[in-house]
Image (cartoon, rainbow, N blue to C red):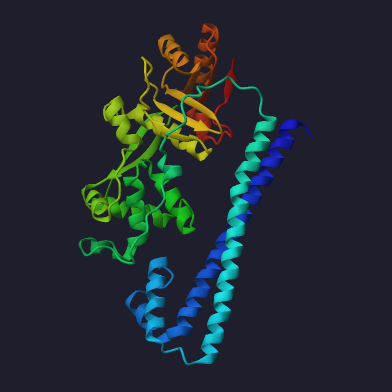
Length: 384
């Protein structure tokens, strides 16, 4: 077995173990939900049935605050307090909850250790790489990785009552876009992970469409030709009602990749270029790289994207043609010591990389066609 085969086998095992740990954690979380539901029914079944009639999704859709309010109400009324059997059952259920919480914490810790083990294995076996700009400590905000969903009330504010039947996931989608996510699939990925459902679920796509119809979101599709057929990327921004909801909930609204491309690179006019940059950033994030569009840097360079992962940091030019661009590559070299290139296709990537080699400029390169075909690593070529 060769070194690369051993590496691939080890990484595949790590990913499989991570999936199994996640599944186990999700099963434990569902078990905790069932314990809470059982406890609620035993404490006051009549009240629980009344709540279910008013909201068929209850109590499965409850957040911690709603559970806390329910138990406070039941315990305050004290109707169960003289029943010794109920007290014993409550003690048993509390112990079961404590045990499940400890198991969940153990699984979370195992998941936290998993990326560190994978990173150490990659570092041990990685070939020599051209040096990227070390720069200052990163202050890069990437909502795909950094955003945390806000706590939500059990029901929407009255002025947004139309969201009642899809409040939780609808509010999560709007909050994600307010935090700066621009690509529809990234929003769906984050909501799906939080809710434990498939990231390409038809229900999530229909949810986004309904939010756009009601002007909570503004949705459109950008297109770029990478070959004979166009590639498309669905993008999202806040609509008028989405901005109202964000203000009512006190959410911070951040400029996303699409907004930065519009403001700093004529994104509305250069739609194909904006689409290429957003596809590159989506593919980078899918491979664990944090990123942003149009980072502002000193000097004459004007890179289209910044990506970073595990100590590597690259300012990237996203190109749509193979025309020689010596000034761009020289500017990137002055900024970070090398050129980082995302081309539309393998043929253009090879041509641009050859140009840089001929100029004596080290670099890294990738292309959108290969990334869309699920090439494993973000960077396909590296040279010194």
